[in-house]
Image (cartoon, rainbow, N blue to C red):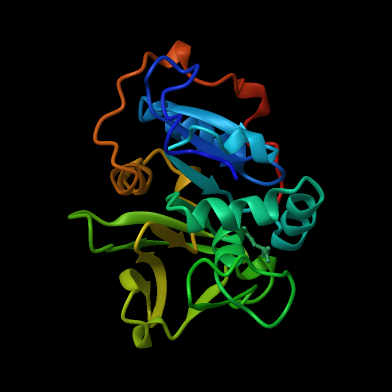
Length: 226
Ligand code: GLN
């Protein structure tokens, strides 16, 4: 079993570290957002990478591909185990799909008891953005939806808190230490959703100097496709 609680400070000089599942998809941009929050990010590509992290981000991308890759490297079960042991996890878009339930592919981690329906707004051309009022914030958040999923009927779940909607559809949802967004906060310069997740992880302020954080180069940013 991977221990993340006991080894928080290991080899990172006592600063909190947030993992980003780095198998496919938008992970470089999440690492960049964390860096801008002053938080050290770590690419998670194998179960051992979960050791010592305070929280994990599962990025957007292609959920079936991510599920396949996660299974191959032993992360699918390891993620379930880590979540069961209390690791806070934030899933954006494909990440939210993996964290929910659903009858169709991919197999889900089922960390949150809501159905998340893939590509529910339609095809790639039906991608859109909207300035939405999200409960935790006093100004609208520019929310980018790319072949986004829809979270179905969370209202019936006592343990789920809908923090934002687009029309009738929940777009930001919290369930305990789990946070789901059907949009892509890492595609904007607005760090409020990342900071919200950091607070769920028990991190109030990041203060690590930018050059000490993660090794992502600008070249690697934005080259991942959905
Ligand atoms: N449509 C993708 C899927 O089903 C998710 C898209 C995204 O993460 N932006 O996996």
